[in-house]
Image (cartoon, rainbow, N blue to C red; front, side):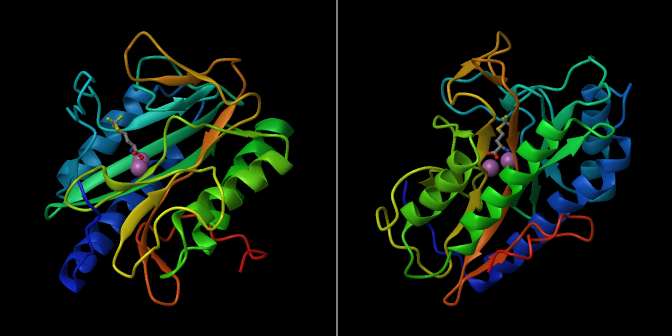
Length: 266
Ligand code: MF3
Ligand code: CO
Ligand code: CO
């Protein structure tokens, strides 16, 4: 596979798919409450995407080689779960932190975004992990620009996570996106500045750091999808889909309800 450069027409379609994915997260936020199951959140998001937005939920039956088809329409990863959490009948409880990851397909193009939600207030530790991970995402975004290198993104994310006593998950990364869910390049959330491919205007990829409060090691759960921290420490993740431009970047997955960029980041 090679990296596709999107045409203006494709970019416009990606803007629409991206905004719709973000709007699913806006829609679901009030339902993320104690007593609600992630299966219920999955059903609500599925119906919103299909019936209201006219989208296809990309995760449903998604089957990369070596995996069984993904059985649900969203990923819901709670507390020590890192990513790809399969919605189930366990009810959320006060203090849980949950990542909801939405990928829409609209008019043949994908929009991919995720946010952290806290059920109730959450502990100071949980809130700090979610906030620092959000800063990691935006620090990564802030260095995107034609002429920058892919390694610049991973380096700034890793530095901020480790400076704060956290670790970066290595096994999963951001990815090119467009007509396919996962395209080249792989966008690592760790690494060395000044290394990797040179970014070009028209490239489109996600940044989606998974940051653990404890060690970086992960394990796969028995369902074959859900990934959790090996040491059972909390894990957080935020994701946006981005376009590289000559002067910087454009975020595809913005919506009225998304958390704004931290004001101290350029
Ligand atoms: N949305 C995830 C990502 O950001 C991928 C989920 S694949 C699924 O890349 F099959 F688990 F949905
Ligand atoms: Co993604
Ligand atoms: Co995603």
